[in-house]
Each structure stands twice: as structure tokens, then as C-alpha cells.
Length: 198
Length: 198
Image (cartoon, rainbow over the protein chains, first blue to last red):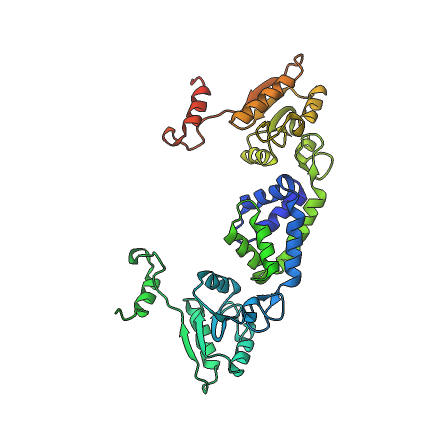
């Protein structure tokens, strides 16, 4: 195909979940089949790039000073769920199982990948703590060594004089998953995380 | 999420093969994880929209008067393969089995969908015929009623005084496909299209 077409295809291929063939299909769609959609897509991309920024309180996506969740009076601000990334927050919101607010770290501690505490969004979390608004903290971080290290660092930095309940989300079998199909590490987590059955 | 984010997600969801979840994942990637890719993508989209147009000879994508295939001296210009859409051409090129040139109709005749001969790119094909450069025509149109109607119309419009060999691509079992898994219409095509085995 033509150079501009191939350049577009290369750019599309770098999007998550888009392979060589999908990129070709999308490029053909935008240039041949539905060319009227291309300007709308460009406008949406530019609009989002221009107006979306980080919530100054929790680090989530925002178009104002605060994100829609932090600005929502109905959310319980004393309950804070700490997540690594915005997509984690989106997944938790999708579950509909949570009515508190969030704090997005934008990563997890990883000496191997050179991620130190100062690279993550810890400072605004400590500010929220200092303001005394946090009563309960749920650590929704990965079930891996780096998630563990991040939890450990975070709790070690919290002021000892505050009565804050801290928990970490449960690990174990996913919904619909049987013991037979779970890997050993998941099974170990599930055994460690067993609960009294009554 | 925020309005600009949701608008972008809506736009992305209209791309072929991109569902609600993929659109969300792509939007998050472009706004949070890899924001440096967004301007490059916008530039590629605008660049392609600006420079890609139709080849004046065959209807394929082009950045000059002629597409790379029509401009390529090594392609056999006496052999023309007629396809419905640019993606069909791309699929045939990918097979590496063809060394002639193409003609893209940009659709197929369909009274039900209101597609009449004047809506398709027939005129430049007849111009190519009139110029006497076409010696063989391969009709690579769909194996359906509309493909059949398009083939019939096309051949009925060709000047009778020219010695042009006309064929239609074969129908039958796809590569790797067994009789057991083929639907009845494919099997009928395959039986009708049987060839002497020697």
C-alpha cells in the first residue's frame, strides 16, 4: 500500500489489542469505507488529550480539578481503595461493588524496573491521611512480589498514631474457576486466604 | 469516566473489530499509559486522510495519480483482476499468487441496498478496455447473488469484438477445510466447480 497508509497502520498497531491485521482493517475502514469517521476520531483524540488530566486528589482521570468520583458527594470519602493504574479503578467501578473513593499510584514499586517510591503517586495519599479524612484503606494491588512490596512500603509510611483500618483485597479462585484449573500460586493464595465457613 | 474520555471511547468503538472493552483499553492507553503516542496517531490519521486518494486507473488507494501497483512496471497490465473492495485487493496481494493489476469496483450491484451500476467504478474499467490494454479479466467477486449479478452486468457491457479471456475465481472448500465442516452452499459451489483430476 501507500507510505501514509502504512505509517497509519504502524501507529494503529501500537494500540493495545490491535495486531497487524486489525490495524490494516481499521486503516482501510477509516480511509476507504467510512472516511467520514476519521475527522470525528481525530477530534475526539485531540479533545481528550486537551481536556483530560490527573485528579489532584486521587490521580484518576479528570477534566476539572477533581475527578467525577472525588467530586461525587455520594461516595464515602473515608474509605479509600488504593490501585496501581486507572484501568484497575475502571475494573472495580465496573463491578459495582465499591462505594468509596480511590487513590491511583500509577504503578507499583519495582527495583528491577527502576520504579522507586518517588516515581509513584504516594505524596497526595499521605496528604489525604494528614487531613484526617481516611478511616479505612483497601489495598487493591497485584498479587505478586511488587504488589506485596508496595503494600509494605505504603503501610510503613503511614503515621502510627491514626486509627485506620487497612486491608488487602482477597486472593484465590476467580469466579467460575475450579481448583482443577487454577495454577499453584493462585492455589497457595487461596489456601492462605481461607475464611471461616459458617 | 469523564465526558471527553467517553466521547473518545464511543468513537473508537465504531472502528471495525473494536468493542466496548477494547475501546476503553485503547483510550486508557492513549491518555494514561502511553500519552506520547496520541499526537503521533493523530498526525498519522491526518496525514493519511490528506494524502491518500483513489488511483485514477484502478480505484485502489493511491498517493499519486496512480497507485503503487498500477505504477509498477513489473506488473502485467494486460491481466486485470476485478475486486469489490480495497481490502479484497489487499487479501489477494497478501497471498502473493497474483502478478497482474486490479480494478476496484467499490461495491457490488445490489438492488436491495440501492446499489446501481452508476454507483460503482465501472466507467474507468471500460476506459481501460477501450484502450485495448486488457487481454485477460479475472472476476474475483463474492460467491453470492450480488457477486453473480455484478459479473453478469460487467460481462454484458464489454465490447463483443475484443478477444478478452474472462474467468471467475474458483469456489469450493477453503484451504484446510474438510467436506464435513463445509456448509451446503459451499459444497454446491465446490461440486459445480469440480475440475478434471489428472
